[in-house]
Length: 404
Image 1 (cartoon, rainbow, N blue to C red):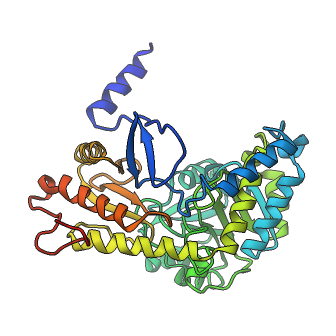
Image 2 (cartoon, helix red, strand yellow; image 1 turned 135 degrees about the horizontal axis):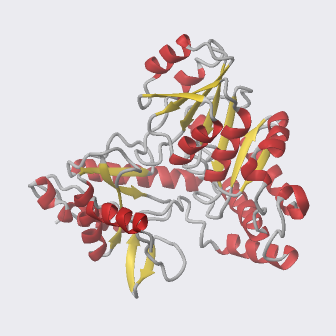
Image 3 (cartoon, helix red, strand yellow; image 1 turned 45 degrees about the horizontal axis):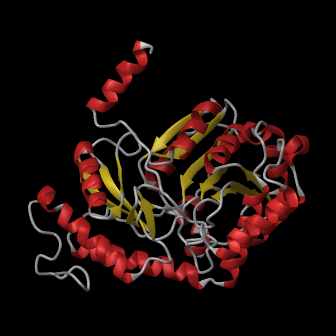
């Protein structure tokens, strides 16, 4: 084996950064089977509990029966089926935009859009905590870019004011995937006309989970849709329990991306089963908007319980709830300890998050029960007792209903 591989593996091991997969032996739910043992699952993005929904599974099966298991080619060769176009139209109606184009993942969508719509004379303004796929897309675009401090609209405006670029693009997540807070979209959008800028909005963790009907951050903040200066990306593998992604915007944007987005052009199309499953998942959400409220209610309950236990949830206001630990090695030790107690919560460390900001990252779904949430909080509190020097499980405050 080349020495550069072994040397790098040694460094990653030394720094506590070596990554490994964990195998789930069955469907994803609020509990999963791992190594023959049942674990409470609090690190899945299946926010509406649709990944194992019977109707969604049946829709995938019917799609396979009609279209087979694979698309067989890229969308621009022979890989576009009637089911791909039906899903695009279904999402277009859901998002209330002119057009939608499917991509194979959120990563592929972000890479494809950023590289297709920018050029060397573009200046990109990116939130410092944006997802790795956004950062990689910016680097590949070869555009000039500047990072503004997380959610700091004043610094962003100063940057826009000083820019002389002929094209300006602001990029932000709606819900930040590691912090669980929201972008200040009203303030950002107010800058677009003034500085002749455009906004690329990553709604991966907002779609299906935010707003009265799951339309995302814009709906949650009562911001009208259809702004021609806003391009939205969303995913189908989180709240919709399927796989894939989409970009929503104008018909002209769709034509441009179809022609220029390399991650769309040079890859085999989404399998029909995923298209069928996604269509059904959107139908279920439209018929049952109470699912979104359950996500939000459960998330609020979990946040309140963790804060009552005096744990630092880093300002989260959504179903993504970090518990700040700080030290890289300690967060992974805690993740393992919590896992051994029957709760699967992933530790997040650099480079995914900044140095000194390692955290446990919890995600809450519509189908978690209060009993399951209480148990998770108790286990977290008990396992972090040594880290924080006091018992966080109750401390006389009674952090959850069944706290002992």
